[in-house]
Length: 256
Image (cartoon, rainbow, N blue to C red; front, top):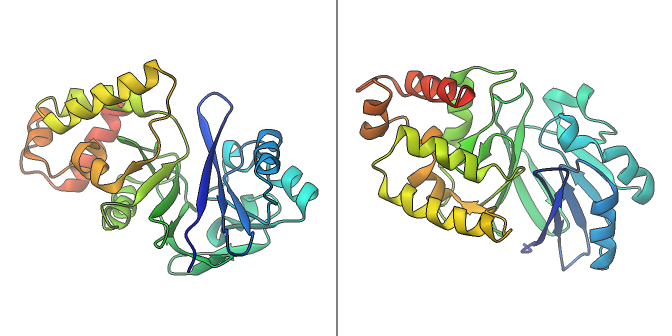
């Protein structure tokens, strides 16, 4: 097994694309390339040759660079089997329970619908790295464009079960806005207040707030905390079913 070298490439207004490099074999994956140019430049600057694209879902700000990168490098495009018809240039289809190898690094694939109907995530256990696209954000989760609250809650529970030290490589720099909402529904969460102070300082200095960790998300992400008595009290749903609380929390964020 190999530990990946991971490089973050900021693109567009708030997207993160990731280069994941296996130092033992030279294999280099691009996770959710919104665009091609900056990604190819970042790989070249490190002497890495792109061999794979790993897509989590079909949205254009995650697949927009697929065909250009594939044309430039001949790389293989890996993506969700349930959404094969919407992944440009797909060569390899993966789904829940599959293991996919990037060089000597192995990823477990999770089917995590909710944001879209075919969303997946890649967990590289040896590298303590989770590439979760738009399913989980730092202190947030994706909008439910094609799924239900119950689906998204089931998806998040899969990711919540990963080791606390797992680094969460989500696809957007939404943390500051997410944290402001989190404080509105769980104002007495001291860990959340502490984290927000750190986030504000980082953003003031142009420093990314991603990756976070599963442990940080469990303590501060309201979408992982529908069973929190404080959050339930704030939304007026003490003792309610977690799916119902999650749905109410998501609805509030949509209008925040």
